[in-house]
Length: 373
Image: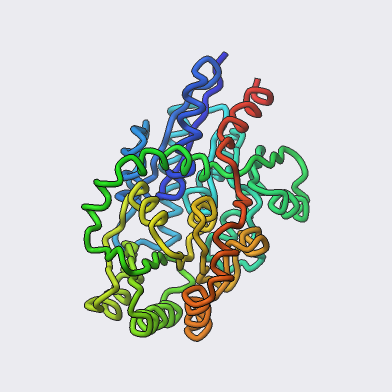
């Protein structure tokens, strides 16, 4: 008898990391009946990813409202997911990471006494307010879940430290599966991307920037943008590409401080293959994104992480990433080092990716076939 699996996602990172798993589980059609629910937490950016992978959600909730709070979003999600679970009747609910969709999806399933699988389990910063609200979301999800699919042994240890000892599997990260799935196609369409981003000057080093974390709203983003402006002024052979997140707390300050600078290009959010191409063409990357911290080492791109703490310590430990925080002088110092110190740059660009080898989805499918029947 097939087991019914409901995959709940709502943001672009969730869609990116679920895409290869959805395809793998659906390929095992004798074993699994898979339904996808898109909560619409980040509707436009999530749809870009799903369309690229030809994934059509079975349920679309579109719960976001202008000026919505975490409380009102959680209330809407819980009520809407309750109905989805009743309609599909899953044997297992899959959630990923640490978003509000993740935690409320797990909670809604628990209330229905459905087994929960947590993809990318065991990430911890050990600071409940950084990242906020993600650290608490993933911690609470970990205490609800029945299956914990951890990326690294460090993540497994974090779960043991919270007395979570059963159902843990160290499998790597499906985000690396996605990267391998897309990279050949992106490279085969080089001419398309070169034309699309013709404003990128080939004789200048391109620094890719992303930023969206809630804890950086306000002064931290002011400091980050000041540091970027300083580097652009100082190093005339550099250019910045910055796809600006849709959150108004990010966009308003980014455009106020950086718009009009000669070699800083502010873009609308780009879809996943475009981001992959931009990453591959960058000299290094400045980011607060967890997904990019995992993906960039596979492309040989050094990272400067604009966070005070990171749950992806493996990248810092193995030398693929520098943890910068958001203080202006520190950011300027680290960017300058990567632009001037060839020994440091070369060491970071050849470090091995600690997060996966591209086979995680198949490992998970095998584990589920052994444990759900």
